[in-house]
Length: 327
Image 1 (cartoon, rainbow, N blue to C red):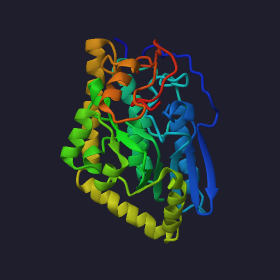
Image 2: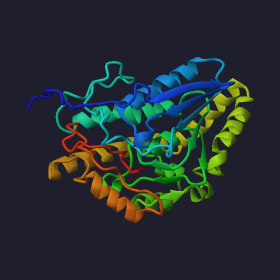
Image 3: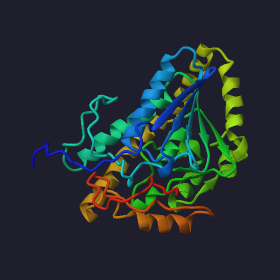
């Protein structure tokens, strides 16, 4: 078997040329994920756009704090596994890590190389940028959406926000940026993953995963107040404090644990491919949606209504959502 194969292809149709909006107000940069029609599910187009905006904010000396938020009803429905803009099979010539391109790699190497770049690698880089970051979360924060919130230093949530990682149903032990036992107590993290149930903002706050919970109508105002308060502190003091806490987390094993679980994650993808011909454990969007609705609390659960195999051939097509299911 050759270690180079014909590149995978897909019919990719982006609904916007601006998947992330960028605005600066005073000393605060606001990054807005801009795919509300698809619950801001993350395709590579959006992921690279977030990276571009973060680089821009870090390079701007006038910016002291960065806020990440989502347009529309939800913060993030997770990774894009079903929209017309699902672009897993696309080459990105300006990759942000030193990992090679994935689209012409065989077998498990295809997803492994891609997810080292766009998921694990980028999330780690975003966590370590020197300026404080705040996630402003409303509605759904599901699976890949957790990764975006968890790389931020602070989380402000609306009272209708909920958090869930239902990917164990696919045979996968949590998302690629595996911070679960650091964001939550270990037994709570196991329950969160074993059941795939939604955690509401109040419980997330009580457990220390969320800093503040406010009514939905007050979310932006509360986030602005917090961002401006943080921005009043000296730049170097903020950077050193962030480094200190992140270093302490890593001494507790966060980075090494994440490395280990990333490989378990890809073992699960490979097992799905070998046993079912499908890297997501044979689950399709409709079956995930039904299962997530039964496991979730009141509200609109589910995973959307159409996806292809996560290897990029989009064979089932259709209008979909992210990997956890905000509608």
